[in-house]
Each structure stands twice: as C-alpha cells, then as structure tokens.
Image 1: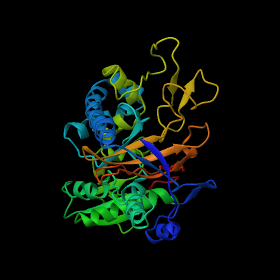
Image 2 (image 1 turned 60 degrees about the vertical axis):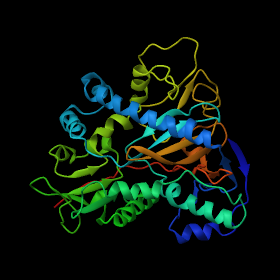
Image 3 (image 1 turned 180 degrees about the vertical axis):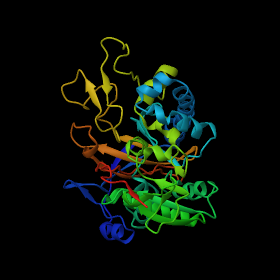
Image 4 (image 1 turned 120 degrees about the horizontal axis):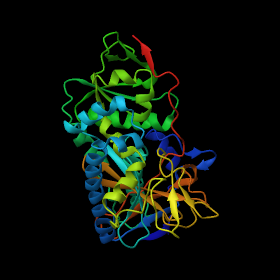
Length: 394
C-alpha cells in the first residue's frame, strides 16, 4: 500500500455540483480531498481486505444467532424487551438487508481488522459509488494517474441488482430521512435513483412527515399507505419514538430489517471476540465489566456511536495516537451490498483526535495493471440528529 500525492482536477467543484454532491466542507474543514490517493497490490485487495470482509460477515451472522437467542445479551444491547419477539421474527423469516459498511484497520500488512460495523444507517454511499468512480475516469483522462489504473468498485451495480431482488414491485418503495440533513438526503436520493433503475416505483418522504392511521398503518403526506420503506434512521431511535410500538405489529416492510439492531450495536464487537478469540480479522474487545488481560492498552467506546466516533484508548495521554486500535492509521471501510463487499472508501485522520469530525476524504486508490484496485472515500463529518417530531396523525 502506497500513499501518493496527486494533482486535483481543476474543475472538480463544478463536477461535484453537476452530480449534486454539495457538501464539500464541514466545520470549515475540507470534506473532499483529491490531493492524495492510495495504491494497492492485487494481493492486498483480495487477501488482506476482500477475504477478511467476507469472513467477518459470516462471523457477524453467527453472532446475530447468539445475540437474539440470549435474553441477557438483548438487555445488555439496550434492545427494549417489548421488541424482542418482533426482532427475532425478522431474523427467523430471513428479512433481506440491503447494505452496510465495515470500518477496518489496515496498515498494508496482514489482514484488515474490524473497528466497527455500520450495519443500519451507513452513509458516504454516493461518494463511494459514484463520485470517486468519476474521479478515476477523469483523472486517467487528464493523466493525473496512470492510464492502467482501476478501482475495486462495483457498488452502484450491486445496489441496483440487490434492490431488484426484494420483491417489492409492483408496490411503491418509499425512502425517508430526517429533514435538514444534507448528507442523509443525498444518500436516500441516490438510493431512490438506484431503485428506479431496478424498475421500482419510488416516493420520498421525510421521517417527520410519516403519519399513522387509526388502524395502525403508516402513510405519506398524500395519505398513501406505506407498504415498503427504506429508512435512513436508526432502529434504536425508531423504537424510542411515540409510534415505535406500532412498528411491532409489522405493518410495513422496512429496509434495513430490525434484526440489524444486533449488528449496529457496538456490543457486537465484544460478542465477536468472545465467540472467536484471536481471530485475525478481530481486535480484542470486551464489555466494561468483563475481565481483560492486564497491562494491555485497549480502546473503549459507548454502545452506540458512528464511524469510530467516541473511540477512546485507556491508559493513553492522547486518545487515538497509539494503542491496540491503531487509530493514527488510515481507516478503510469495505462496503457490503447484500452478502458481498463490492467496494471501499477511505478516511484519513488529521491530528491526534480520532473523532468523526477529524477525518477528511482521500480519493480512490489505483492499481498499476488495470486489475482491481480500491475506491476509498469519506464518511460524513456531520452527526445525524433525531427528528423532533417523527410521526404525524393521519
């Protein structure tokens, strides 16, 4: 793996505006940065990143079985007891999920290791699937990178294929996010476009505008009943809302399904380590009360956090500079669509703060023989806010 400086496209801001990519800074800091890319060997992509990703997904599915079958773990994960039956039902009937994102530790040697699994509401999707592919093509045309460069990136095609296999047609797929959150909005707009390319009828609605009828059905602003809904809104928030109990009657097909509560919780990392200790793709992780090896530094994090935010390394003066999690290293994120990992995005930390707001976007990696390289892009630097009033009365 090589970190390489490259010249920016002179008109990349105009190109971003042309495709609707509007958020280019966050808190005054660059969100998108074309001055650096990463280059990999084919073995690094296939053996160190792609293969561990598929292994991790299999381990996670085994962990779901254990978590949903253990009342104590469900309590520890903070999943309301009233929701247990519904969550288990969505797993037992094998409700399909669409996509997720593994955040990985990778330093160019050995297999990538799991930081966390953003299984329920991962963003940075449009940049990974579309804008960084455009960067690759235009950077080659402008001779900014070698002409034989390529990306490990089939995210867009896989999303269209996966959306077409949900069995939704001829019904309408509603897509929803909170109001006044630009990144969430362009994420769901992109997914809506993919759904249309998959042959589905779609409709957009803000989470705050979803209504609930007297007989327990959800509706949009035109009073159309919502039968299928992609929601970019965390399950733990949905269950905490005033209408959360109505979801348990199973009136709507939701993407992502409720069983992903077991995967989006950071407690998953401790369960994985307990089930598969010393697995080469895992980092040692424990619940607060669990016994840990003495004398070893270890990262800590709350049960719920986004994109490595709130990771702390105990016993260290400067969080994120050193330690078991290697937070000073670049963080690749492997996209999962269905049960495959079709592409990557990349975050690079500024300074010593490992927080979410300290990561900037670095463009796609390339490979010298037009075999699979790696698309790496940014994560959001803006936290998602909860909807102040999520459900209206129809």
